[in-house]
Each structure stands twice: as structure tokens, then as C-alpha cells.
Amino acid sequence: MTPSSSARILRTLSRKNAFYFFTSVGNYTGHRAMSLEEFANKIREVETASLEFHLYRGDFEKWADEVLEDREITERISAVKLLEPIGNALRDQLDFTVTKRLEELKTLNS
Image (cartoon, rainbow, N blue to C red; front, side, top):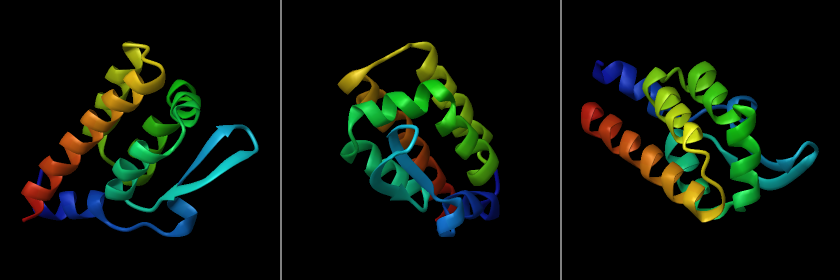
């Protein structure tokens, strides 16, 4: 991975491409993430019901793959899903996974 590709993944997105957190279809939490860093922070803030809703629908993977264009984080989130965590165990797993990737990308970009 090159610094330019890590910078692309770390970029701030438009509102259109932000990740919007819901607890179910039509129930917006009021939280959105316009970058991978914001996404990492929101994982610590949103209700676990929202994390469960999005993880098991594949929403996180789809956003990471199609919007962030980061195959690595997509695969790591898929691995978390295979563990079938719920509640705070899910929050902890996602937090660890996303934060670790974020730190890797920042190191590459510096």
C-alpha cells in the first residue's frame, strides 16, 4: 500500500458518502461518520443495537469496500462478523479492529 492509497482511505467524505447509523430501517440514530477516523469514534458512541443492525446486514463491509475502498478493513470486519458477537463484545471487537487499521493507515501516511 502506498501513502497515496492510505491517504485516500483516510480522506474526509462528502455527506452523501458518509456512514449513517440506524438501529433499524428508518430509525436514524443521529450519528454519521464522514471518515474512517470518525467511524472509529462513533463505534464507541452509538448504541450496540445499531452496531448489531449494521454488522449483520453487511452495511459496514459494503461501506468499507465501496466507499472507503479498503479491502483490508472489509476483510477484518467480515472476520468479526464470523465470531457473531453482540452487545459490548461486538463494540469491543469492532473498536479494536477499526482502530488498529486506522493506526496502520496513519503510519503509512506519515
